[in-house]
Image 1 (cartoon, rainbow, N blue to C red):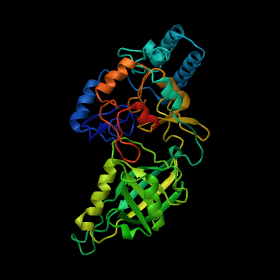
Image 2 (cartoon, one colour; image 1 turned 120 degrees about the vertical axis):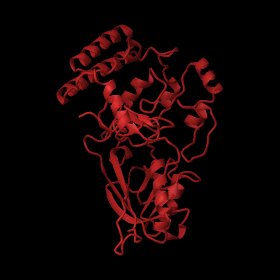
Image 3 (tube, helix red, strand yellow; image 1 turned 45 degrees about the vertical axis):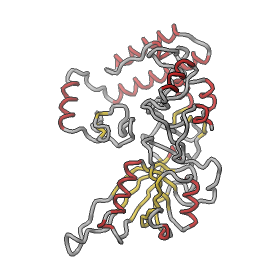
Image 4 (cartoon, one colour; image 1 turned 120 degrees about the horizontal axis):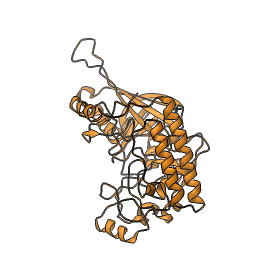
Length: 383
């Protein structure tokens, strides 16, 4: 079945790059407005019929074999001739499957190509070598999913018995410290900056920034909180909180992050006059991802214990190491969000610095604790 949720309300446009999330701002996709659906229907009226699941699987397997072959050729010093043949093979695979996606060019299929122009540049070899690799274990955040549900108190202004209002639901990302899933925890919801004396037995909300994640977690844990939620303050999503200095090894409560828009909604819920002096209940439900939930956006396979993954700087998006290397040898962007990475092209780097650009959409950046960095690649990437 074709994906019907392709509309980003924040960007006010369609996003076809991800099944559930806008790859520009991180918002959850919804069904397009009526006018947008009409336009999309007209523009797709001549498109091919969607291939069935069996054909999609055959195409995926063939494409995976081709990609692995290309990677092996690249590692052995292969050049563009074999890649041109592979491009023809992939075109035939797409034709057989009834796929209407554009076939990659020969240059895109050759990791040793790169250089200037509009065809893409490879990421700096030094940068690639220094991006951390992680072997996934049972506690890795990428293998788990967390849902949050905040239930407001009944609205007593409508009836004598009170009318139940709709709960606030959101997805979250677990931090790589604190308690690991599975867990199912419920408690009253309080804001750390508004009710610092009411943390005991509560799910405590913090805004990102001002102090490290570990400092926030230790504060919540020492005051008897049952869980901690951090609201992101930048549009980069997903983002995984870390404790690189191991300052929170004594923390035994769950630590999770929600995206910026959900954090805003949560604070609005707590600050509502209807909820003043009332208790908002919050439930955190964490479990292992299913077989068809989450995975590498390059190869579309799920992550598993024992896989080696690369987490890119700035955006923190994760990919299988082999998939990331295949992409970064011919592109200087994240495969998911297109966030820029450094190149070995000195002229291009001078132009980037002159334009004060550290991201595909421009602007300077925040570090993991919400502090604005300067615009030097070495400092931004590796401190």
